[in-house]
Image (cartoon, rainbow, N blue to C red; front, side, top):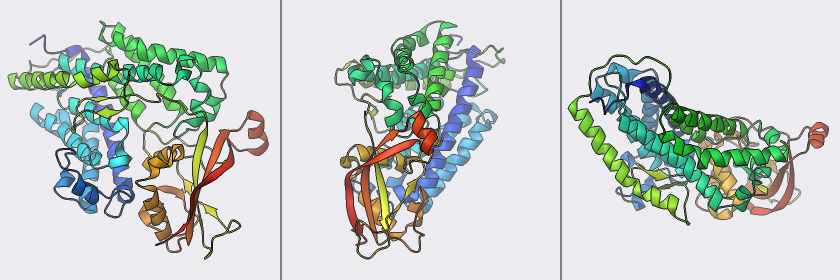
Length: 467
C-alpha cells in the first residue's frame, strides 16, 4: 500500500487538522452567539418558517426534523465542544474509524446550520469550510499515514479557490486588468480593519504591484501545487504570504484562514515520519470511493471556471461537497453606509433628537477607528454593507431588524456595539439614512482625528414606528 500513503506529510496533516478544528470552533461560536436574533424563533429570518417552505432534499438539516432555539443552541455549543476536542487531538486517541466519526460530527452539525441559515449564511467561506471539513473526515489519524489522494484533493480545493478568484477578476471589473482596483478596494471593502486606512494610503505604484502580484499568485502559482517538492511547498508558501497580507488589510471572516490552512496541507515540513502500519483495506476502499465521487462532482466547478459567464461562490449540491469560489469580481468606487437612528419623540421631525445605533464592525461614527474581528464573522454588519449597495439585498430582513429595534429586542441589541436606547425604553420611531463615506487624508486625520468623512446622500427608510 505504499502507493496509497504519503508518510512524509504526517506533520502537514497534523497542522492542517488542528487549524481546521480552530476554524470550526470559531464558526460554531459565531452561530451560538448570533442565531437567536438572525434565524431563531423570533429572529429576522426564522428557521421554522424556512423549513416549512423549503423541502429537506434541497437543504438537508437536522432542523427539518425539529427546531427550537434551545435545540439549536445545543447543536451549536456541541459543535464548539467537538471542535475543542479535535483541537486538543482527541481524534488521535481513538481508533481510525472513531476518529473519522468524530470529524464527521462538526461537518454534519455545521451543514445543518448553513442549510437553514438563508441570507445570513450565503457566504463562500461557509461552503468552503464544509467542503474542506468533509474531506478532513478521510485524512486519517495517527494510526495511518495521510492518503495521497486526499492530500491531492485538498490541493484541488486550494487550486479552485485561488484560480477561480483570479479568473473572476480578469473576466470582471476592468480595474483588475488595469491594475487599479486597489485604488478603491481598501476604502470600499465590506468591513475595513484597523490597518485598512494605511493600506489605502499606500503609493499608487505599490497598489499596481500588489494587483500584479495577486494575478501571479492566483493565476500562475496554483498550477505549481501539483509539481514535485519543494516546488509545491514554495507555491503554498506564496499563497500563505498573500493571504496574511489580506488578513492585515481587512476583515474577511475565516476566508483567508481556511485558505491558509489548506495551503499548510501542501507544505512538506522537514520532520521524520513516525512508523505506522499499512492502512486497513476498508479504509482504502472508503477513501478511494469518496475521492472518485468528489472528482466526478468536480465537473461542475470546472465547467464554471471555463465559462465566460463564471459565477462566484456557488454550491452545486445540497451537501456542499464540491463548490465554486471567487471574490470581488467587481470593485465599488464609492462607499455607502446605511446609518440607523431612533428618536423618542411622539411625532418625528427633522429636528427631533435622532440618536444613532452603533454597529460593531461596520463604519459609523467617523471618529471610531475600525477594529479587527476576523476570523470571527459579524453577519449583520456584512449584510448592512450589501444593503448600502442596493436596497434589494435588505428586502428580506431589514424591516424585521427595524421592528426588533422598536421592540428593544435584547438578542438583536447584542449584535450591536451600542444602542442609544435601553431595552426597556426603546425608541418611538426608527429611520435609516444613506451616507457616502471616504477615508480622510493624512492632513484631515491629524486635524480632526477622524478616519472617515461622511456626506448625507438620501433617505433609506422614512421614520417608522412599531405596528
